[in-house]
Image (tube, rainbow, N blue to C red; front, side):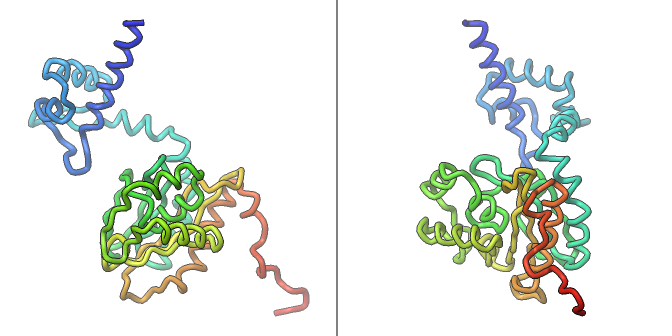
Length: 267
């Protein structure tokens, strides 16, 4: 039993070392890793040395440490990561060429969303998201889609927690948010109007898998005062998300959209 407990403790410490790195601090010295994890310097040194030998960490010329490519190799095997991205990317590229705005693909990980891919252009509106980054669900377009289709327990945990306000337009009232989520489920479209930054609007649609459950969300994020409106972008976004869903084997997406069937003898 003590050996098992020790092994579990070492695993947790090792994961804590990896979690010490972030987008804000991608490079850390040994003492910084020790300070951020609360581990003794000798323990930190032993774990970091093992991670470097395995390839999870790499040492820079300056003597600091950064995450290694071996982690990327392992992460690429996640079924909700690279395979989904590879299916979606050609359709995302088409959507980007049609809009030249931010096109994003995200999945849910418990109470957060994780961005798998983002295409952007020089003149696209700046966003706070990045590939591989996490974000709260209650305020973004993709987050609203994924929260609306999340299990009830997840929804209640989010609604019962602190709903961070980024702008005056951010919905932070749980009752209001419930109504928004119900509307997303009815329409299969989520609109986040200046909820994260004051100059951006996001429109998102669900991506469904082989069992028709929502496995991801696709969005276009554009200037609030620009040439694109939510009403104008929605048809193209719906078509793109439906195409990705069809490629993933969604039975619903394989059916022709209502009203799309050509009348015989018509134009």
